Length: 409
Image (cartoon, rainbow, N blue to C red; front, side, top):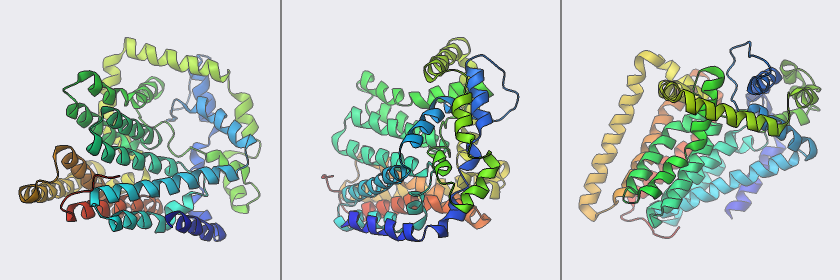
């Protein structure tokens, strides 16, 4: 039934797609910049210095031509099909999470229907943005964390961290949850150090990307694919007048051939050069890489998504971030007091599920505050993040209202 409702909702949105074209189609285009890719590729191969101080993720020149090759040979409808499958899969995972933590079927289906009913993420299925991918990766990580609460398997915890790392490579706002869950997972499995190290190994892609960005731009940015994923989908839709008008900012229809033909070197050469740069940085300047990573994590996490950046800017970013953090601290304190009362009453939740419950509460409350402020400020893309926020809050409320969660997922 949930699948039928989701497909029907997508059909309705597809029939009225023009309502969303103006608001959702232009966000990705700033990343479709041939000059950044060419400069990055030339720098990695040691053939030319970078003249401008633009921040372009280091893996762009490897992934971007491959992405062009995929969309050039495959009908654009396949992009929509893949993103629809990810969107529906995320809804199904949320149903399973809600049923497990809430202990009641209506909690799970309520969260799933809430996710499906919101317009913005459903409309994203028809656009070439990376939000669908990052949303699915984050929900998959939550699903695995819930599974870990049941199985206590270090492999499941490491897989959850790895999915969060994937989400971080797409949206750097996930960097704090990734590091936090990795540390928590290693602590929970500290009795077997070799298994605990799996959690830290799963953060490897984020560390590697940050090191490469330090080598390239002197800033340890953890995101490698934010806003560009499947962005070339727009280049296959030039028959639409709005797309034609917007694409003037990123050259013309020859943009596709220009990038693919002008990149210096082949993909294997670029991959080998990336590995060499990474190993050189880790071998010769590990302290510098670590220091810039720690100094820039906070700023990068804000810049990784417009809603966080807009919300914190409204709070006067550097002077008054204490206000946002104070709200989060108060919410955490309230949750801990409520959990303490319930543990005394019926012994739930146990340690690992307590950690998960606190995380599931802190993240959505923090994002709800910053997202609401950003939306109030005029950032329409803040709407994209309401589904997981509201879904997680409903999940936590449902879980807290049940005496004991179900053990079946």
